[in-house]
Length: 215
Image (cartoon, rainbow, N blue to C red; front, top):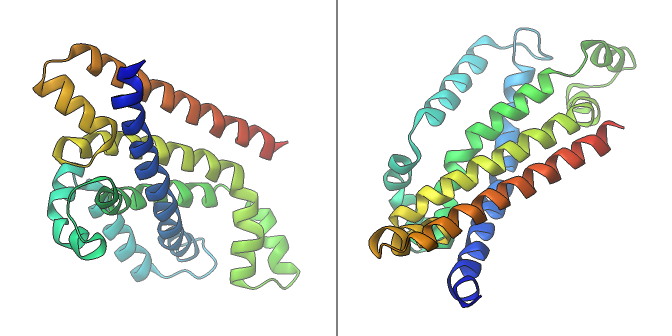
C-alpha cells in the first residue's frame, strides 16, 4: 500500500493532470484546422484548394514528428510559456503540440461523415456556413467526435509516458527512475498495470458516451 500511496498515486495524479489539460487544449486547437479543412474541401461549403492543401501539408508535417524529438525541439517555447522546460506542467506544452494535429484529423474525419443530405437541407432553409458547421455538422458528428477525443486521450497517455523519460513527470518518470535506473521490476510492472487500467477505463467511458449520444 505504501508503494502505491507514496510513488504510484502521486505519479498517477501528475499523469492525469498532464493528459486532461493537454487533451482540452489539443481538442480546442484541433477544432480550428479540422473545420477549415472540411469547409475548404472540394465538396465543402467554401472550396479552396490552396488553403486546404497548405493546411493539410502542415498537419501532416506536424503529425510526422516523433514525440521525443518534438519535445526536445520546443524546449525554448515550453520555457517561455511555463517558465521551465521539464516537469509535469511543462510537459503539457509538447503534449498539446504533439496531439492537436492528431485531434484535428479525427475531428475532420468525424465532420466528413455527416450526411450530405442534412447539410443540403440546412442550406435550403437559408442557414449560413457557420450555422451549418456549429448547429448541424458538429451536432450530428458529436458521437463520432467523442470517440475521436477518446482516441486522442489514449494517444496522449502514450506520449506522457514517453515524456517521463526526459523529465516530464508522471508514471513514465516513475518507470524510468525506479524501474530502469533502480532495477525495481515490481514498480515497472505496477506502472504498466496502472496505465492499462487507466486506458481501459477511459475507453469504456468514451464508448458509454458514444452509445448514449447515438440513442
